[in-house]
Image 1 (cartoon, chains in turn cyan, purple):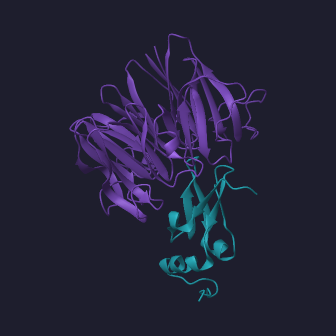
Image 2 (cartoon, each protein chain N blue to C red; image 1 turned 30 degrees about the vertical axis):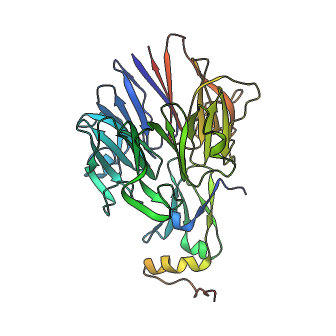
Image 3 (cartoon, rainbow over the protein chains, first blue to last red; image 1 turned 90 degrees about the horizontal axis):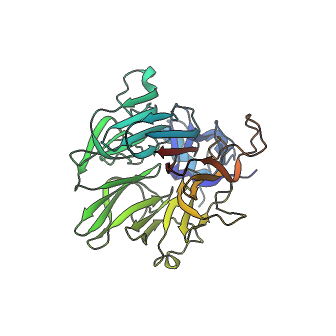
Length: 82
Length: 333
């Protein structure tokens, strides 16, 4: 599976209600991926309107602050690297 | 007579044909909206209005402008980003509306505005340019120019060191003797080109293979897709950056290029004054129909080779503009 581009998590927008990370797609729609899927290891965000996909660059511990922003906790505690 | 043709991504009514008796100064495309600036300063808009990027939206039915509508006021310049619009009005005020979560409105902490909010006053003769998450204004400064930018700064596209956003205009460049003609902007980088067609400054996360020193003394035309940059020199195109969908220009037969522009991830050129070619990511039909294929989209156009899409009579003046997976051709005769 080849992706169109690599995007760092800090460049994406996180919506606390939909729990989606999104990023503009060159077609005018937005790439999206659920935070829980990222917690499970998914690093590909897809566009609902075209075939393009991006690879999201992140570490699992990056997700903690976004879970907190959404007022929830990760499905299981994230081990923080020493 | 001006005729405006467009094709490509049209999910929010952002492509509308139009014929006008007037001179057209500029087409500017946002993520899902389009604005046309006429020679007399009138501004027409169509497409997505979910963030009031075109006009005040007070109910859901106003999420789209399905036909061209005139905006109130007279304008000197316009540029569109993802879901925001920036203009210079007839009094040389810099104004912005729509949504700018990364500071794209340039009005400080405020991230949304349903009307044109004032950023600052400008010198007469200022010009606007944008990418989907950044905006710059080129302002007369002595006998030269200064360039102010704002929006996302995660790749140092506005200034060093990096930061998440810059939400007010920041002076990126100032030289009283160098007159900047335009700024070519990718997603994470930009290049300033002076009135002698020389690249004078480049900033941000540039494609690795691009070395500005190789180009400083050469007269060029520069245009950027989101993730690649393209330089027209000696009537051919040199490309740098992301080639995941054929964005980097290649030509089997040498084609003499008159002028070049780019959409989000596709390129458009004029050859021999009357022919338009396109290449790159063409999934939405924005690179035209591929020879031998039917009207149904079979995804053969996702990566489009250099493709002739339009020819006009020699007495017609052609101009080209690129949008978000859309191609715009303006014919004046």
